[in-house]
Amino acid sequence: MSYRVRPDERPETGWSVDAARFRRFSAVNDVFNRSWWDPTVRSDKTERFYESYRRPLEEWRNARGFQRRDYALRNAAWHGADIFAELKEDEDRREGFLDPLTVLREASTDREEFASPAEAAREVKQVALVLGADLVGVAESDERWVYSEVYSRASDGAKPNELDSALDRVIVIGQAMDPSLIATAPSALAGAATGLGYSQDVIVLLSIAQYIRNLGYSAVPSMNDTALAIPYAIKAGLGEYGRHGLVITPEHGANVRFGKIFTDLPLQVDTPIRFGVEEMCNVCRACSDACPSSAIPDGVPSSELHNVSNIIGVKKWSVDGEACFNYWAKINSDCSVCIRVCPYTRPHTGVRHRIWARLASGRLRRLALWWDGRDSRGARVSSKDWWSGSETPVTIGPTRSSGSPNGR
Ligand code: B12
Image (cartoon, rainbow, N blue to C red; front, top):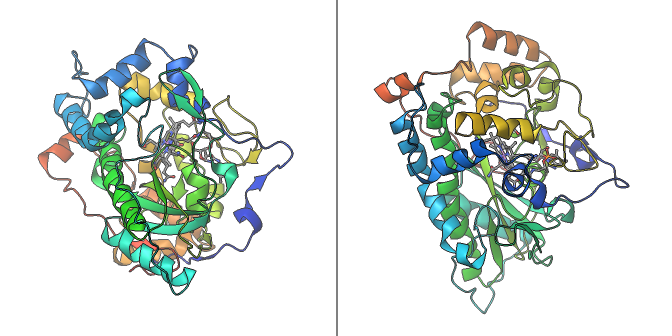
């Protein structure tokens, strides 16, 4: 990584929240939950989409990347996360997706003391990296990003969000996704990168939470449930917000998933970072041009809503979740085209990358984009090439805890 990474000194990292209009988001309104209760989103196609994750499709699409072995791999990659999600469904819990993970031993009754919050944060980050996180940072808990209520499949409506507000620190972890799979998006094969990310996340989050509990503190591991990952990842110094509505990290670009652990262990928090992403997204339209469902805005940040699946009162680039998810239902898999084409999704090693990164985080960013265009970087890789082994699965790049910009 050779971006010019610097602390973001702007209040709220430059994103404007209109306090008078702002309303916390109810998870009942995210587009996945709406696809259960809202007839304007639910359809035969969305049912079939979910079904394709549970049992083999009877008819395979005759398109590369959407054949039997692609779905076989995708669903195998999801298997670990699925086990935890389904474990307590009879208690109306879908752990990791609608409810926090709870497969943990009790916390120890006596507390380990740390010399300082800085020392505690250093140690927890070291532990997080050794337990399998690729990136880790710490943020202060912020009620605005905690769901006002969560979704209950049993009642097909809202239930209270039980997160304890005394847990005032959030450890955010990043898990890089396999770039060789993402390069084939859109495809069921690329969906394996998503599934793997979640399956790995579950184990890493549970292990870090158990470590903290063994020291006598509370720790609630959370994946997609409970709170919005993106504002927390930004606050924890893991990356900057991009036009595609995703966090772009200096190590893996947007090709990364986030999990979080809420804790009362006193930890020093990290500072948000800047490395030219906002300026780059102002001149780049790679994601909005390539998005198959035209769900990504090509204009300036705005607080206008596409539909009830957007949070109210935040001026930002916002994706049309209905359009995005409709496309998933059409192709029977999730889509990662915006990640594939994003200029920050690239091998983060070697001299060429270092030069590119310097250009991208400075005034010559347009030259960096031109260079990418000339090299056709971000072009879709055929799943046939992936299966033939000519696209070797790439090992994941550098790791970092916030506050140590050069990695471990
Ligand atoms: C629901 C959801 C979706 C839905 C629908 C979103 C919706 N509006 O309903 C859809 C189908 C669009 C979707 C698609 C994808 N998603 Co998604 N999604 C989520 C999920 C589970 C909940 C987010 C939510 O509640 N959104 C509803 C409202 C709040 O949406 P919104 O107003 O448009 O706000 C979005 C952003 O603007 C941002 N945001 C919200 N508040 C604020 C405030 C500030 C100040 C800022 C700067 C940003 C910000 O977060 C929201 C993300 O949807 C999160 C996990 C989580 N708990 O955060 C993952 C998550 C955001 N998705 C993720 C990913 C990777 C994807 C996909 C690439 C698919 C894939 N392969 O996994 C695509 C990308 C599409 C895109 N360009 O956004 C990652 C993002 C990682 C990253 N690098 O940033 C997350 C964090 C999951 C994870 N475990 O890592 N997703």
